[in-house]
Figure: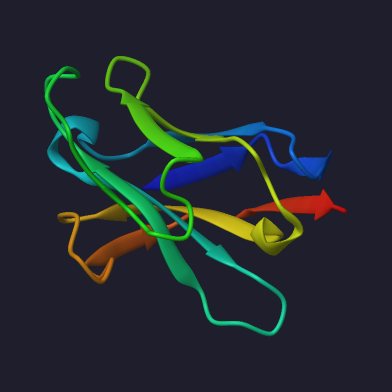
Length: 125
């Protein structure tokens, strides 16, 4: 059974940082891309960042323009865990953040195969 469990969300002031984790099981972690998505209240879910890589040192990364330079995605293949380091957070970053398994990192963040249940991130002004 595929499982994706996000953690690390919470309440933070504008300008602060959070690090999200996505612990996984039930599939071959090295063979898939790991992505982060978010959904703000009243808005559609959007792709944030995606990482594909099997050897831990050479990764393909795609990041949305809205978070480029502030958010960094990474993965630990030994721990089968994905991460999203979020810095310089703004209230516009508030939303539910979802981890996902993708076949590859498409430009439109499509090809999602599995979703996590999400973790809430709230940035206060």
